[in-house]
Image (tube, rainbow, N blue to C red; front, side, top):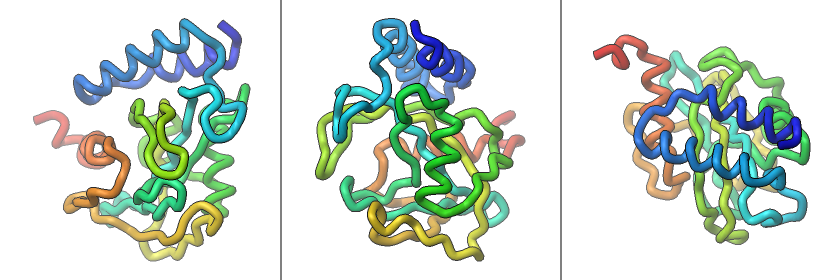
Length: 192
């Protein structure tokens, strides 16, 4: 296993699964990482057919809101983020994507610098059919601030209420992400 792949495996092992599906996705990702070093997208849109993504979810914890953009290629309301470049650390990819897509320096002060969630998703939209292994990073945002998402990738942006999120056109794992995020934002809820 190359050092870059070993680093990703270490990150994945440190994620505490929130539910049975995340436990399954973590186990599958670790098997995949053991089987190949070809885990970074080399050629757009889908070479190799399964590759790493760093989602960067902007969260205003005080307002209990998340910022999503209308992703032009996927045709879904999605967090910012993107593919991890060959050899790039996923956290560095998250920082880079925040700078490229939001024009901000990412503040990892909501859930820390480790990904909150891991998912495996078959893509939809213009480049449908490949699998993204997504590491969900959380960065601090402020609902009162206007964010100009990269117009080449996003057609619109909107803040969504964490407690009343009902958007059928989003990542199929977004509701699970919000449930896990809620356990971080409301620690006493996780203890009951």
